Image (cartoon, rainbow, N blue to C red; front, side, top):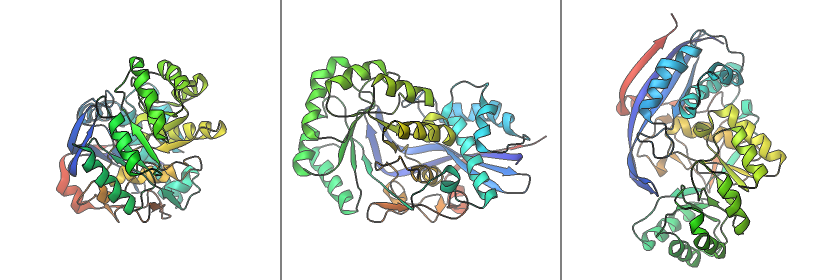
Length: 370
């Protein structure tokens, strides 16, 4: 297939409520929506998950625009691509910028699956007809509000509860939740808010029978996490530290992690995400698909990835209505009794809602083959 045109749409969508983590609070989600066109007029869609400020990684919406416009799109326009796995070799001269790369690579996967007449899940090797989903809840103003939210999501059927924590909002929060919900699969996400100086505090988490504690230490660390894991019964899950297959391999060999959160944008695309999945499956390391507050296109890619066999823990891919009054896809993603059905129609399985896209779009750029 030959890429003849790429369109970038800059988007702004207001979330139903603010989402708070240890590094900040967000309500307006700024992101990029990408569309590619091939020589036959087929289209593929992708979504950049970078935020508008560099608090999760160094990438932002604006740096993604720069990388896509000035480097990545020129490397693909007019090129013959036989398989989406080939995209990585085209991007090889560019270091880092995984979210920008993933946003474009995912469009190629969608396009490839449509040309083959198969679902993206099938193209990736997915085996599940439906996926279990959990919910991620930001830091709340008090425990009562958090307990109310958890109760509501459990009643909706979500299979796992993840809560954000930070120093001063951790042990008491987890104790309160465990008291209210003794049997619920529960995990805590620290977003790098702690250090090895906090070992005694983190060891207290063992009493809460957590599924895992996610990324307790520095965003770029795997050494200190290995030290910490030896001190904890609770499994450590790495998120921000895993930016590639090699990061995953080294973290597993060092004993830094017992679970890995795979995010398509963070690792540079679906091909790299699948490599990490395959490696972890061979070594008995469970993986799950993390969320980046995606709109519908990014959410669709997550669903397809989660259909792979080693995604055996509920991920963060909640339904569209969890975050948005109106999503940018048709039909919207729906959770039924804690499950999302994996689409079987060609590509990502959802159609762009162009009326909603026009409503939320703030800018647009077109790139064509010379």
